[in-house]
Image 1 (cartoon, rainbow, N blue to C red):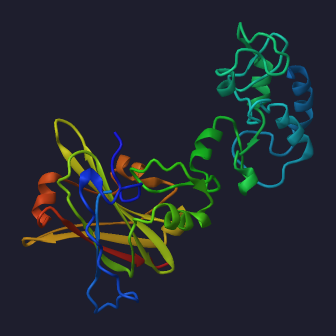
Image 2 (cartoon, rainbow, N blue to C red; image 1 turned 90 degrees about the horizontal axis):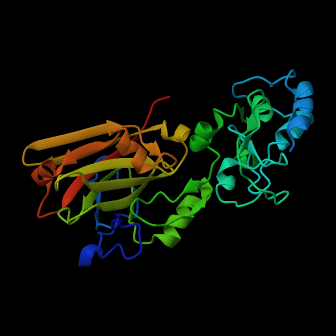
Image 3 (cartoon, rainbow, N blue to C red; image 1 turned 90 degrees about the vertical axis):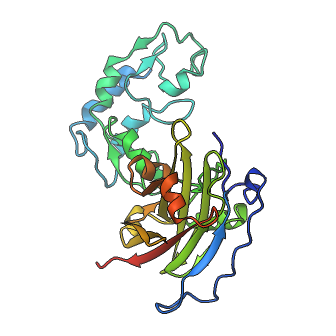
Length: 329
């Protein structure tokens, strides 16, 4: 289900409702004694030759299993190049299938092809190349993000999992609920947000109030804003999801526009106050490389249902006090 978000196009008018204008933030970050700033956020064929080459390389350094780093020898590069898919230039990894002439193509591309891209021969019946699979299990392959800085070489069974979390993979647009498919470097994330998602409000200071309006809107909804302090930018997200039989849950999370290692230097506190009640959540912010979905999946966020939200809401608006702090080394 698509959901409106303050990060997406037209998000300042979700479900026909007009966004309330945010209060102007103070020109400087508030001091300890000053009241927190506040903002109103609306929802928003090679087989035999490979074996011959492997004989000289596998016995050398780095030829065993497990990840590693450092320079790759020309012989090792020559060996791994035998596994390059002629279509996408990624590596052909086990299970390895070949055409009748012995040419290889990766499984992802093979599913889209009607004939061998090298010889135009038939790809059926599928022929398993066990020799190449043995070679693949004895060498280390570079991470697919080697061109952007990753120096790891990995066993083919470790490669997919590493690449899913590699710090050198491109960053995706962190806005939840938006259909934005942008990807780029970490340094380009804020520029993208400022130009493509202008509806997101940014407040200065380590102690602010995140005011989400119209929390009773039906369906799945996201509220998003930015907080700037300690020389970094943090994305604050409140997400409402429809669970089952109309039951709704809210998830509040803070993400750092930065790496996982940088995120370890900070802590955040979310606090709901009202009617002589207080609900507090403290945690380490997640990097935008992880994203909101991962935090929710692991319950690493403030979670509450509609009944609790109504205990703290005022006329359908929910204020969340957000405090960012640095961690002692």
